[in-house]
Length: 470
Image 1 (spheres, rainbow, N blue to C red):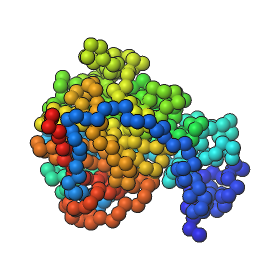
Image 2 (tube, rainbow, N blue to C red):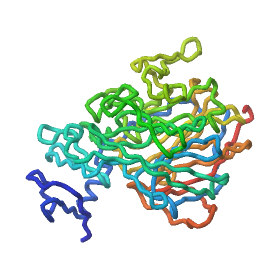
Image 3 (cartoon, rainbow, N blue to C red):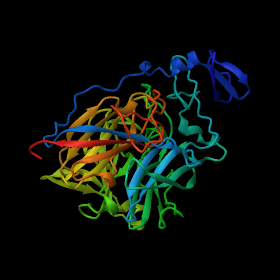
């Protein structure tokens, strides 16, 4: 029987079904792995009707059958792009390779495998076992010092080309960071303004709550690194994983569930040309409920903040303003993070929010991921909403169940929006989920009946279908 080998320091707490292979290795059979990976073992996400009204401006979004993956040159995910003045896209990437330049966002050598007692239970995704803690098996954040180096790396890349189905990728040198409180550092929002690149980092620990729901998103952005030469050199933020620029630490570090996890910049077009007031706006996902959902792919609400895009402000806590609701139809901004209010909510279906401005129709289009509470490699849905202004009432356009076999980090890059409403969706997929259908990776574009996904940058083309009222 084929078996999977997982690093672990052998102790008396080893599950009785596991076979000791050597002193530092535990070997699980496929049957055992199947039991651990069974997502049906855990509470399903909350089911509730969508609280947003149906859009009266956009009737639907139609797939044009043009699609491509870049698996022949890219084997990484977390592509978060910004359209720079030079016409290129500057992007983060994570956990993989770009033209033989690789990064890994988990710190080296950490022993974060948990084996709770049988009455507590445990479960796994491909590289982690999550336990929600006891005196014998403490939560992850309390034994982070087991790692000898606490080193993590994040990726930087330039994407060139005006045809989204024939892009060229240049990997820049990865950026290294030493952590002391968290087990991972992942890319969050990227923004290039006037040839200065702002790159947000978000810290995570892998931790499950008492219900078996993963709560691995710490907060975001925790800190920014800044490049004044488009990725050749970087300046680190004065903040670190003990003192983040956004003042929250999240449930995985001993706090309450995060509100502003996995923050991304609103895409206002080339060099932020369509920003309504010169501010850079950030959207994050999380929850206001102490028992709510806030992990990397699942949240209960979307939140909004703004800051002036300059090096002094971006790493200054006092420069941030948080959306605190509306008064007489106008947005209220507060410098107190505790005043922050959701932009919109839908329990367990608001995550990885990415908002792009469509100038031809003067609309903001939001793409959301609806993951599952366990946070693992299970089904993720994608849905799209629209609004006339960031702080206006949002309306749902469409909901795609299990889109592209569990797509995540979906975004609409403004560079490829056409006046007729045609656009492309960037996303990744197939992490811990079903194997995608094989595709011809060498063709610039492939006509398919539906978009699939691979663990790379995937591109699918769509077109807005407007109503007569638009």
